[in-house]
Image 1 (tube, one colour):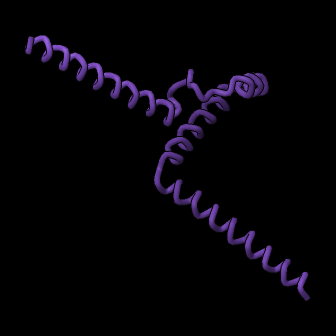
Image 2 (cartoon, rainbow, N blue to C red; image 1 turned 90 degrees about the horizontal axis):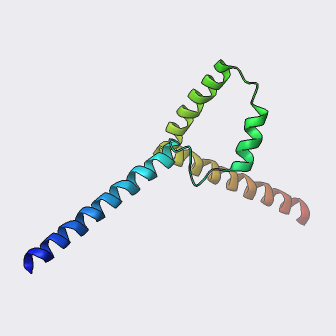
Image 3 (tube, rainbow, N blue to C red; image 1 turned 90 degrees about the vertical axis):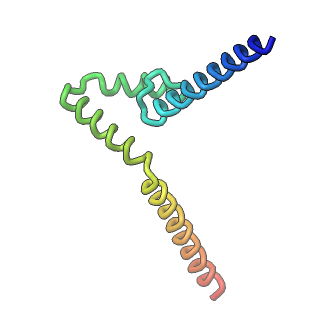
Length: 108
């Protein structure tokens, strides 16, 4: 009986580890843009852009693929996150500054 419980436990652990590994691989593929059949695909926009770029040369397609690859690598860094945070903070600061100037003009 103990042997049967041990086998069932080992099977459950193997299934759990396998599922976790699969989820990790899938997450990496989505984040790095390697999964072309992604759940996050936008078919209407994809079809529209595919029609618009149908006459692109092979060099243009190659250049677009390389630029996209570099952008994906840059976006998945802490530096990019900090850059976006800085842009948000400076935009809010600019907005507040502009608002305070317009309030001063109204009160005069």
